[in-house]
Length: 251
Image 1 (cartoon, rainbow, N blue to C red):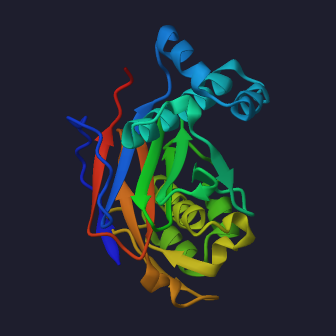
Image 2 (image 1 turned 180 degrees about the vertical axis):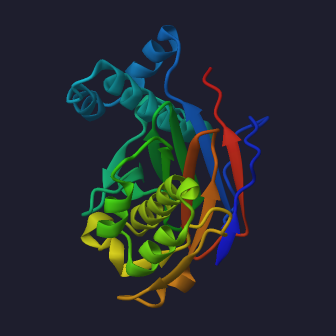
């Protein structure tokens, strides 16, 4: 299935849980004024504080904390619960999920961040993955494409004009990452096992999966442009009638 996201990311009048056929995608800034950063730190769990402390750079520590604090804030707005009281689990591949008591919540989520932005996806009762990358100079993009893209994707990549290859590289990368994150298997599944579209302007699509042919019919991809200079992708299990793209405004 091929799908495209709306380029408009407004702030909603109210935060309302998505209906079963709807996926909510949020974009949020990571570089906040100091007072807003400090307000998010107390929302994090002890484990999240420990994970933040492992980053070498202060900038990376702050951005991680803001990303996790924002996740908690959005979930709290959906569920009308205190953000600091939310609890998470993780599956055997490390994919996080929200706990409702001792059980998994029916609200599924995924998040990614790059540069100054974080992107979040929320959906009811189906798997979802999201990825985002800030487009930047990458001299070894041709070598990375040769090593990690499928033969089909590499053929498309090298056929493009030089001026389009950098955008195509990040488009392909985010689509593959979003699918892997949604599926939950991460890098236990080879990047070369499946093909996605990548040419600029081509609708987002999981074209084929060589080790599990049924996957192409069960997953939808969406192209995301959360901000100028960024490209992203959303992967949704069993399709979706629509997505809503929102901009999160920190209180």
